[in-house]
Length: 330
Image 1: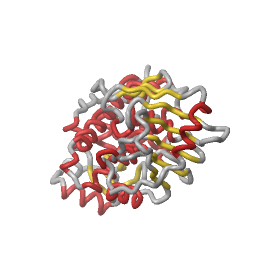
Image 2 (image 1 turned 30 degrees about the horizontal axis):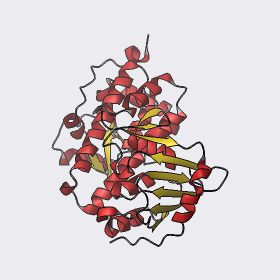
Image 3 (image 1 turned 180 degrees about the horizontal axis):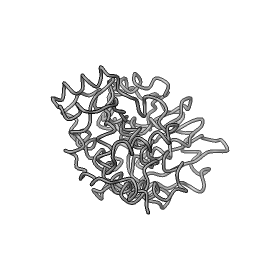
Image 4 (image 1 turned 180 degrees about the vertical axis):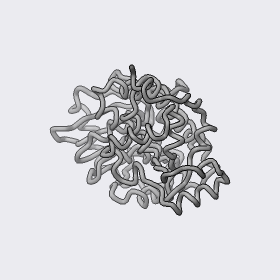
Protein backbone atom coordinates (compact mmCIF):
# COMPACT_ATOMS: atom_id res chain seq x y z
CA UNK A 1 0.00 0.00 0.00
CA UNK A 2 1.37 3.45 -0.87
CA UNK A 3 2.31 6.03 1.74
CA UNK A 4 -0.66 8.14 0.62
CA UNK A 5 -3.11 5.30 1.31
CA UNK A 6 -1.56 4.48 4.66
CA UNK A 7 -1.24 7.96 6.10
CA UNK A 8 -3.61 10.28 4.30
CA UNK A 9 -6.98 9.35 5.77
CA UNK A 10 -8.52 12.76 5.08
CA UNK A 11 -9.59 14.45 1.84
CA UNK A 12 -7.02 17.11 0.90
CA UNK A 13 -8.32 20.60 0.24
CA UNK A 14 -8.28 22.25 -3.16
CA UNK A 15 -5.39 24.68 -3.37
CA UNK A 16 -6.14 28.18 -4.67
CA UNK A 17 -4.48 31.52 -4.07
CA UNK A 18 -7.38 32.59 -1.84
CA UNK A 19 -7.33 29.41 0.23
CA UNK A 20 -3.57 29.68 0.79
CA UNK A 21 -3.70 33.38 1.66
CA UNK A 22 -6.14 32.53 4.45
CA UNK A 23 -3.62 30.09 5.91
CA UNK A 24 -0.56 32.38 5.95
CA UNK A 25 0.23 34.20 9.21
CA UNK A 26 2.96 36.58 10.29
CA UNK A 27 4.84 35.36 13.37
CA UNK A 28 8.26 36.56 14.56
CA UNK A 29 8.43 38.82 11.52
CA UNK A 30 8.08 35.90 9.08
CA UNK A 31 5.26 34.68 6.86
CA UNK A 32 4.47 31.13 7.97
CA UNK A 33 1.96 28.30 7.62
CA UNK A 34 0.90 26.14 10.57
CA UNK A 35 1.21 22.38 10.79
CA UNK A 36 -2.53 21.66 11.01
CA UNK A 37 -3.18 23.74 7.86
CA UNK A 38 -0.41 21.98 5.94
CA UNK A 39 -1.70 18.62 7.18
CA UNK A 40 -5.13 19.55 5.80
CA UNK A 41 -3.60 20.56 2.46
CA UNK A 42 -1.78 17.25 2.12
CA UNK A 43 -4.66 15.13 3.44
CA UNK A 44 -2.91 14.04 6.65
CA UNK A 45 -4.14 13.89 10.19
CA UNK A 46 -2.04 16.45 12.04
CA UNK A 47 -0.35 13.86 14.27
CA UNK A 48 0.70 11.78 11.24
CA UNK A 49 1.91 14.89 9.45
CA UNK A 50 4.05 15.91 12.42
CA UNK A 51 5.41 12.37 12.69
CA UNK A 52 6.82 12.71 9.18
CA UNK A 53 8.46 16.00 10.14
CA UNK A 54 9.87 14.59 13.39
CA UNK A 55 11.33 11.61 11.54
CA UNK A 56 13.20 14.08 9.31
CA UNK A 57 13.99 16.70 11.94
CA UNK A 58 17.51 17.31 10.61
CA UNK A 59 15.98 18.87 7.48
CA UNK A 60 14.12 21.49 9.50
CA UNK A 61 16.92 22.66 11.82
CA UNK A 62 16.81 26.42 12.39
CA UNK A 63 14.00 28.95 12.63
CA UNK A 64 14.38 29.81 8.95
CA UNK A 65 12.65 26.46 8.19
CA UNK A 66 10.39 25.69 11.16
CA UNK A 67 9.77 26.67 14.77
CA UNK A 68 7.23 25.83 17.47
CA UNK A 69 4.94 28.57 18.69
CA UNK A 70 5.12 29.64 22.31
CA UNK A 71 1.94 29.62 24.37
CA UNK A 72 1.81 33.43 24.18
CA UNK A 73 2.28 33.44 20.39
CA UNK A 74 -0.45 30.85 19.96
CA UNK A 75 -2.94 32.74 22.13
CA UNK A 76 -2.12 36.02 20.39
CA UNK A 77 -2.58 34.44 16.97
CA UNK A 78 -5.88 32.88 17.95
CA UNK A 79 -7.19 36.19 19.31
CA UNK A 80 -6.09 38.16 16.24
CA UNK A 81 -7.86 35.76 13.92
CA UNK A 82 -11.03 35.59 16.01
CA UNK A 83 -11.24 31.82 15.89
CA UNK A 84 -12.16 29.23 18.46
CA UNK A 85 -11.43 26.31 16.14
CA UNK A 86 -7.97 25.89 17.68
CA UNK A 87 -9.27 25.97 21.26
CA UNK A 88 -9.19 22.22 21.80
CA UNK A 89 -5.64 21.61 20.69
CA UNK A 90 -3.39 19.90 23.22
CA UNK A 91 -0.10 21.00 21.70
CA UNK A 92 1.58 24.15 20.47
CA UNK A 93 1.57 24.25 16.65
CA UNK A 94 4.66 24.17 14.48
CA UNK A 95 5.12 27.07 12.07
CA UNK A 96 6.79 26.52 8.68
CA UNK A 97 8.41 29.29 6.66
CA UNK A 98 8.22 29.16 2.87
CA UNK A 99 11.64 27.49 2.81
CA UNK A 100 10.28 24.99 5.31
CA UNK A 101 7.31 24.26 3.04
CA UNK A 102 9.70 23.61 0.15
CA UNK A 103 11.65 21.24 2.39
CA UNK A 104 8.42 19.37 3.13
CA UNK A 105 8.39 18.43 -0.55
CA UNK A 106 11.48 16.30 0.07
CA UNK A 107 9.74 14.52 2.97
CA UNK A 108 6.13 13.87 1.91
CA UNK A 109 6.01 11.12 -0.70
CA UNK A 110 3.55 9.74 -3.21
CA UNK A 111 1.42 10.92 -6.12
CA UNK A 112 -0.96 12.94 -3.92
CA UNK A 113 1.92 14.77 -2.24
CA UNK A 114 3.40 15.50 -5.66
CA UNK A 115 0.12 16.99 -6.93
CA UNK A 116 -0.42 19.10 -3.84
CA UNK A 117 3.20 20.33 -3.78
CA UNK A 118 2.93 21.36 -7.41
CA UNK A 119 -0.30 23.26 -6.76
CA UNK A 120 1.14 24.89 -3.64
CA UNK A 121 4.23 26.19 -5.47
CA UNK A 122 2.03 27.51 -8.27
CA UNK A 123 -0.09 29.41 -5.72
CA UNK A 124 3.02 30.91 -4.07
CA UNK A 125 4.31 32.02 -7.45
CA UNK A 126 1.00 33.56 -8.49
CA UNK A 127 0.88 35.62 -5.28
CA UNK A 128 4.41 36.93 -5.87
CA UNK A 129 3.82 37.56 -9.57
CA UNK A 130 0.83 39.77 -8.75
CA UNK A 131 2.92 42.02 -6.51
CA UNK A 132 5.91 42.03 -8.86
CA UNK A 133 3.70 43.00 -11.80
CA UNK A 134 1.92 45.72 -9.78
CA UNK A 135 4.81 47.53 -8.02
CA UNK A 136 2.66 50.62 -7.33
CA UNK A 137 0.94 48.59 -4.58
CA UNK A 138 4.12 48.69 -2.47
CA UNK A 139 7.02 51.06 -1.93
CA UNK A 140 10.17 51.07 -4.04
CA UNK A 141 12.42 49.50 -1.43
CA UNK A 142 9.81 46.89 -0.48
CA UNK A 143 9.42 46.03 -4.17
CA UNK A 144 13.14 45.42 -4.54
CA UNK A 145 13.28 43.33 -1.36
CA UNK A 146 10.33 41.24 -2.55
CA UNK A 147 12.06 40.69 -5.89
CA UNK A 148 15.20 39.52 -4.13
CA UNK A 149 13.19 37.16 -1.91
CA UNK A 150 11.45 35.68 -4.94
CA UNK A 151 14.81 34.91 -6.53
CA UNK A 152 16.12 33.44 -3.27
CA UNK A 153 13.20 31.01 -3.17
CA UNK A 154 13.85 30.04 -6.78
CA UNK A 155 17.43 29.31 -5.77
CA UNK A 156 16.14 27.09 -2.95
CA UNK A 157 14.08 25.16 -5.48
CA UNK A 158 17.10 24.72 -7.76
CA UNK A 159 19.20 23.46 -4.84
CA UNK A 160 16.50 20.96 -3.83
CA UNK A 161 16.41 19.69 -7.42
CA UNK A 162 20.19 19.18 -7.48
CA UNK A 163 20.25 17.46 -4.09
CA UNK A 164 17.36 15.11 -4.77
CA UNK A 165 17.82 14.08 -8.41
CA UNK A 166 17.81 10.39 -7.48
CA UNK A 167 14.46 10.58 -5.68
CA UNK A 168 11.66 10.09 -8.18
CA UNK A 169 8.86 11.75 -6.23
CA UNK A 170 10.65 15.08 -5.80
CA UNK A 171 11.92 15.07 -9.37
CA UNK A 172 8.28 14.93 -10.49
CA UNK A 173 7.48 17.95 -8.32
CA UNK A 174 10.41 20.10 -9.34
CA UNK A 175 10.18 19.38 -13.05
CA UNK A 176 6.44 20.02 -13.01
CA UNK A 177 6.89 23.62 -11.87
CA UNK A 178 10.18 24.33 -13.66
CA UNK A 179 8.00 25.57 -16.56
CA UNK A 180 5.36 28.09 -15.56
CA UNK A 181 1.67 27.24 -15.74
CA UNK A 182 1.24 30.53 -17.57
CA UNK A 183 3.21 29.15 -20.51
CA UNK A 184 5.29 32.26 -21.24
CA UNK A 185 7.87 32.37 -18.46
CA UNK A 186 10.41 29.84 -19.66
CA UNK A 187 14.04 30.11 -20.60
CA UNK A 188 16.07 27.67 -22.66
CA UNK A 189 19.57 27.21 -21.19
CA UNK A 190 22.00 25.04 -23.16
CA UNK A 191 19.12 23.20 -24.78
CA UNK A 192 17.12 22.53 -21.59
CA UNK A 193 13.96 24.32 -20.46
CA UNK A 194 13.92 26.04 -17.06
CA UNK A 195 11.93 28.66 -15.23
CA UNK A 196 13.86 31.88 -15.91
CA UNK A 197 14.74 32.69 -12.29
CA UNK A 198 16.04 29.17 -11.70
CA UNK A 199 18.20 29.30 -14.85
CA UNK A 200 19.89 32.57 -13.83
CA UNK A 201 20.42 31.26 -10.29
CA UNK A 202 22.19 28.23 -11.74
CA UNK A 203 24.44 30.34 -13.99
CA UNK A 204 25.49 32.92 -11.41
CA UNK A 205 25.99 30.26 -8.76
CA UNK A 206 28.85 28.79 -10.84
CA UNK A 207 31.10 31.88 -10.47
CA UNK A 208 33.96 31.62 -7.98
CA UNK A 209 35.95 34.81 -8.73
CA UNK A 210 34.23 37.30 -11.05
CA UNK A 211 30.99 37.96 -12.88
CA UNK A 212 30.86 40.34 -15.85
CA UNK A 213 27.37 41.22 -17.10
CA UNK A 214 27.13 43.06 -20.43
CA UNK A 215 23.65 44.52 -20.87
CA UNK A 216 22.64 48.03 -21.88
CA UNK A 217 19.14 47.62 -20.41
CA UNK A 218 19.31 46.93 -16.69
CA UNK A 219 16.71 47.26 -13.94
CA UNK A 220 15.81 46.10 -10.40
CA UNK A 221 15.39 42.52 -11.58
CA UNK A 222 18.99 42.59 -12.81
CA UNK A 223 20.02 43.00 -9.17
CA UNK A 224 17.50 40.36 -8.10
CA UNK A 225 19.24 37.78 -10.29
CA UNK A 226 22.67 38.69 -8.90
CA UNK A 227 21.55 37.59 -5.44
CA UNK A 228 22.65 34.11 -6.52
CA UNK A 229 26.33 35.11 -6.72
CA UNK A 230 28.48 33.70 -3.93
CA UNK A 231 29.95 36.02 -1.30
CA UNK A 232 33.40 37.27 -2.27
CA UNK A 233 32.79 37.20 -6.04
CA UNK A 234 33.40 40.59 -7.69
CA UNK A 235 30.54 41.65 -9.99
CA UNK A 236 30.95 44.20 -12.77
CA UNK A 237 27.96 45.36 -14.80
CA UNK A 238 28.81 46.89 -18.18
CA UNK A 239 25.88 49.02 -19.28
CA UNK A 240 24.85 52.44 -20.52
CA UNK A 241 21.66 52.01 -18.43
CA UNK A 242 19.51 53.16 -21.33
CA UNK A 243 16.35 54.99 -20.17
CA UNK A 244 17.78 55.01 -16.62
CA UNK A 245 15.74 51.93 -15.70
CA UNK A 246 18.02 51.16 -12.75
CA UNK A 247 18.15 54.02 -10.26
CA UNK A 248 20.68 54.86 -7.60
CA UNK A 249 18.06 54.48 -4.87
CA UNK A 250 17.28 50.93 -5.99
CA UNK A 251 20.94 49.99 -6.00
CA UNK A 252 21.37 51.56 -2.56
CA UNK A 253 18.51 49.41 -1.25
CA UNK A 254 20.20 46.33 -2.72
CA UNK A 255 23.53 47.21 -1.08
CA UNK A 256 21.83 47.79 2.25
CA UNK A 257 20.05 44.45 2.09
CA UNK A 258 23.08 42.48 0.82
CA UNK A 259 26.28 44.28 1.88
CA UNK A 260 28.45 41.22 1.20
CA UNK A 261 27.70 41.37 -2.55
CA UNK A 262 30.15 43.65 -4.36
CA UNK A 263 28.88 45.31 -7.56
CA UNK A 264 30.51 48.00 -9.72
CA UNK A 265 29.35 49.61 -12.98
CA UNK A 266 31.10 50.60 -16.20
CA UNK A 267 29.85 52.03 -19.47
CA UNK A 268 29.71 50.00 -22.68
CA UNK A 269 30.18 53.03 -24.91
CA UNK A 270 27.12 52.29 -27.02
CA UNK A 271 28.86 49.50 -28.92
CA UNK A 272 26.89 46.48 -27.73
CA UNK A 273 23.48 45.22 -28.75
CA UNK A 274 23.62 41.62 -27.50
CA UNK A 275 23.86 40.59 -23.85
CA UNK A 276 26.57 38.46 -22.30
CA UNK A 277 27.42 36.86 -18.96
CA UNK A 278 31.10 36.15 -18.31
CA UNK A 279 32.14 34.04 -15.32
CA UNK A 280 35.70 33.89 -13.92
CA UNK A 281 37.28 35.78 -16.82
CA UNK A 282 40.64 34.40 -18.02
CA UNK A 283 40.75 31.61 -15.45
CA UNK A 284 40.54 27.85 -15.93
CA UNK A 285 36.88 27.94 -14.92
CA UNK A 286 35.95 30.71 -17.39
CA UNK A 287 32.48 30.48 -18.92
CA UNK A 288 30.83 32.88 -21.37
CA UNK A 289 27.11 32.90 -22.14
CA UNK A 290 25.28 34.70 -24.93
CA UNK A 291 21.83 35.85 -23.76
CA UNK A 292 18.85 36.40 -26.02
CA UNK A 293 17.27 38.96 -23.68
CA UNK A 294 18.07 41.17 -20.70
CA UNK A 295 17.91 39.57 -17.27
CA UNK A 296 15.60 42.44 -16.25
CA UNK A 297 13.03 40.85 -18.59
CA UNK A 298 13.66 37.28 -17.43
CA UNK A 299 10.48 35.26 -17.76
CA UNK A 300 8.46 37.75 -19.80
CA UNK A 301 9.03 35.92 -23.08
CA UNK A 302 10.59 32.69 -24.23
CA UNK A 303 14.29 33.32 -24.66
CA UNK A 304 17.54 31.37 -24.96
CA UNK A 305 20.92 31.48 -23.24
CA UNK A 306 23.77 29.56 -24.86
CA UNK A 307 27.24 28.89 -23.49
CA UNK A 308 30.03 29.64 -25.96
CA UNK A 309 32.33 26.78 -26.93
CA UNK A 310 35.12 29.23 -27.84
CA UNK A 311 35.47 31.83 -25.09
CA UNK A 312 38.76 33.20 -26.42
CA UNK A 313 37.11 34.95 -29.37
CA UNK A 314 35.34 37.23 -26.87
CA UNK A 315 38.50 38.30 -25.04
CA UNK A 316 39.28 41.38 -27.19
CA UNK A 317 35.72 42.62 -26.65
CA UNK A 318 35.93 42.09 -22.89
CA UNK A 319 39.39 43.65 -22.64
CA UNK A 320 37.98 46.73 -24.34
CA UNK A 321 35.08 46.86 -21.89
CA UNK A 322 37.49 46.79 -18.96
CA UNK A 323 38.94 50.13 -20.13
CA UNK A 324 35.55 51.87 -20.07
CA UNK A 325 34.70 54.64 -17.63
CA UNK A 326 32.61 54.19 -14.51
CA UNK A 327 28.81 54.31 -14.87
CA UNK A 328 27.17 56.52 -12.24
CA UNK A 329 23.55 55.70 -11.52
CA UNK A 330 21.08 58.57 -11.14
